[in-house]
Length: 373
Image (tube, rainbow, N blue to C red; front, side):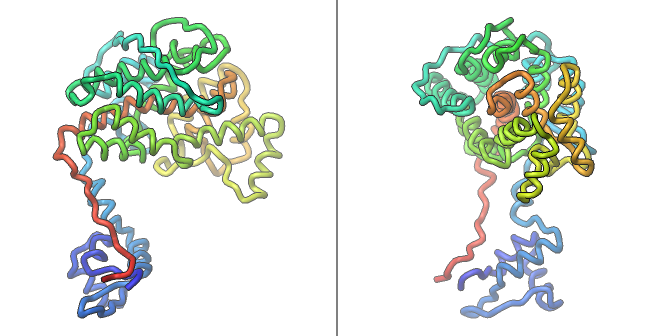
């Protein structure tokens, strides 16, 4: 029958034993129907009960297996291996934080290679994010040792350098650090590499974000580091994840001349205001707080005019990245490129953890709701 679950499927969704499912029936919480002498349950009724009880079911069975020592999100704060991330953004180089996330070793002056220039025949419509994605694939092809998973950190350093090198120059690099190289490919304005370095650190990892889950699933199959990063990129390009900063940038450009009018028009159309709220943080996004505070040192922010209209909400890092790009005349999707390059660090760190676990441990069972044989 269509939209019916077996006892075992219902139990998995509710996160309970099959005997408990029958207890729910006896208490009137579920209704069972006999089909070919087997008890079947309406999927909508099971889902409604799952929502009422807060059951995580099969999702919990997968995510509860993931033990990580990389990032901690707690009480609206973010830590890398136990260290406050805003503090690291203020005092560390991106390369040194990457090394910390990958190894747990506190080092200084970690160097990334120069990077190989990657030629791309892309249409004029190609975005910076398109270039990042293609550069990852081409860097993979150019590494004959990519299947040596013990070289993950070496591969990651070269990959990040190659991805930065793949972006077109709009200025002159002022040094060899990743932030210095990347600024010359994002902004024609005088270099503010401390700001870009901080943004890269703030975005390097964020626990089990959806793109990191995708990366860990790929790593569970012992995919090589480039494939892991490609999996993360696929999820990151969703409208609910990495591209949110480009949407926020478009909104800020409209709000630059009339913030109140732009907000009012969004509300009138029933559209959410881009760059506010978060699925994990409750009162504040510490990454946005840090980056916006640093940006205020360079002048007034369009974002602050919008924030003033949202007393019940709080800005997230998407809005902060959008303001960063707007202030320094970067391309509309520059925030996406910064996000992607930074998050390569986190995806590789999680891949290194996952390589040590039993392979293919995230094989989930679907809840079939179609016609039954």
